[in-house]
Picture 1 (spheres, rainbow, N blue to C red):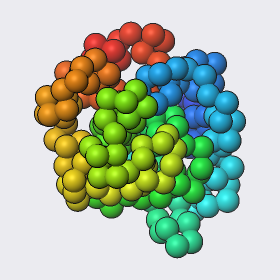
Picture 2: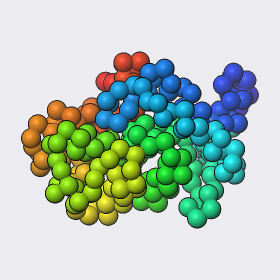
Picture 3: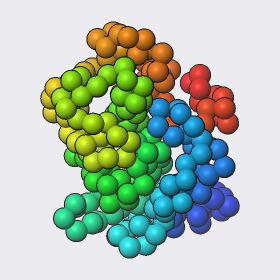
Length: 212
């Protein structure tokens, strides 16, 4: 109640939520792709606060919570969705995608299909690095070129995972099954704790999160 509203963070979280995540993740707090670095020249383009100002409709949040720290968006042709936290981080940094319309389309996919964004993006980021390293190729990926940030490697691959089609079936099976199926030292590249892919924030800055 009042104690929550009196918290210094209340005003910010109840007005723009975590849509300014791109600011918080600058300076090495976010990680790119399959934990391949902490610096990304495209990060300045990921200004979701401006996207909220244009496409935001109202605040949203957990039942009876006064903060309402989530954003309810509506975008012509793509529809409605609610977003916060990991939904801002994983589909941008994890997939190396700075196109906010593409980010929103991914957001809608995750909610439409009931997919966990962190796990889904983690598996795609892993496969994308394997592709870049030459461990897998288009014969493995149903002819899809896993170029970071491309439409085929983002919304196209999420669609395959959701429908368990072709290479998407392998990624949908999870980290253990996927690395066992591919082999070729692919497990070395799998970023996971307790068989779960990691959210794209720097674990060196959050050691507790690394062992949770």
